[in-house]
Length: 439
Picture 1 (cartoon, one colour):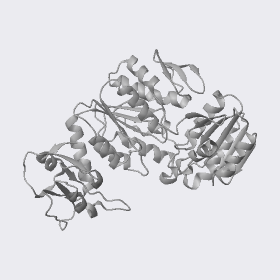
Picture 2 (cartoon, one colour):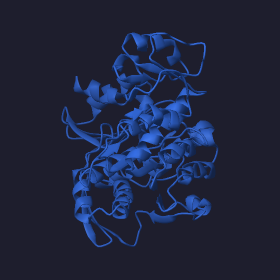
Picture 3 (cartoon, one colour):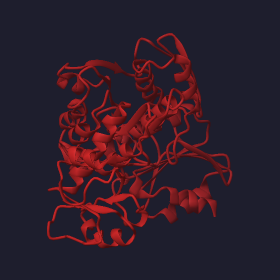
Picture 4 (tube, rainbow, N blue to C red):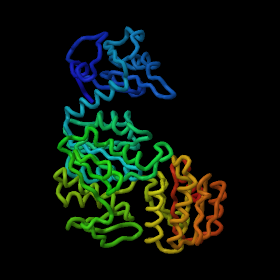
């Protein structure tokens, strides 16, 4: 992000305490360890840190100046000092100003599950159509948004931002500074229900993504009844779902899928109806952005899931599908259905706790047990405080208190060639099961 002095003052409405216009083009940093000579330091405040305590360090590392919300923090080493009431808000305003200067077509994505997968699919498609910037890793909060907008280049044609939320109002806040042209709601399920209290509240929180949507933009949403109920129809809307009349699934196995959508054929090198459904949102976004179907198809076929999302590995004679990046009732059911429908025997499903379900945790874990009763499976193995409630009536289940006991059981009882699905929330650290099996 490169801006001159007048642009900084115009975008943030900052008071210039020290400095004058020397024709310098400034860059910005929130990290004293990566300060460059032309940088202005923006001290941010978090729960466990206060960047204002490191202003002197930033200046020692050759920062040209800094923002401050405290007029008593004046350091003579600085060539430029900007006073604002809130440094985080100033960072957001700078990033938004810079984004509007570049003017990329902006796609914002949210959802209870699958939003990172859709973001990566979207990037795989859009990068083939022009210079594209996406939210990296899990940069789906306000600071991550600033970092993403700051990464734009003068030739950036497309911007893809992921929006996470833990409370009402957070997605609206992100939408205010992202100002999307295309808003995508992947789904609105029971993830975060412990925080928001009801599925309706979750749907309302997801719908906040449209608050600052371009008036001529489009909402691409999962065909969710609650979203349809609260949709104010201020924007053109396209709903997508796996039962769409324009969708024909041609072929599916444990590692790939082929399907036709609106008369054009696509291939994914990943399995599951949920992934086909996710790709429909990407296709619709691509069509709206004017991308040719052949480029969309190429991008979808090139899509590679990121680590811990349907990541297939051969380890010690077992075929392990690691889908433990995150977990909620909808994503667990989707993973189970795909795995038990398309994977060869013998099969083992290893399930851990699903997080952020609040007082309904026991209830939602029991529902997974009921869901499993519709399938056949050789082994159901569980680990965690709430996973013990996953008890299908028609399938034998074994619960473990430690990963060590679980791994020892797998080694002792699951024969070579067994297909194993790992599914749990990130805090369960199921990658450690793979590490132990690998030893």
